[in-house]
Image (cartoon, rainbow, N blue to C red; front, side, top):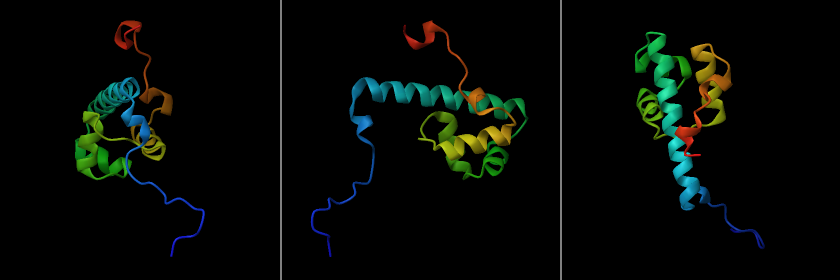
Length: 102
């Protein structure tokens, strides 16, 4: 039975995905993050399955992560940094102004 005065909790995509410039920026950054994760995995000679096991995600999720199609949690990012033995900040390399459209 619903409690009076409380609104139901909304589940699903965040409102930020409905904002054009913000959604485009998120997609761009997820693609860059995916490229970086793939680069780190290949530098360590790991398969996607091995990297997924080390991070603690399903191999199919690893594929999505590398393609920029997964909205990663902070916990997953920390696990990836630990698995690849890099500081968390190294998952987000500086980009040239040219790359960011400035």
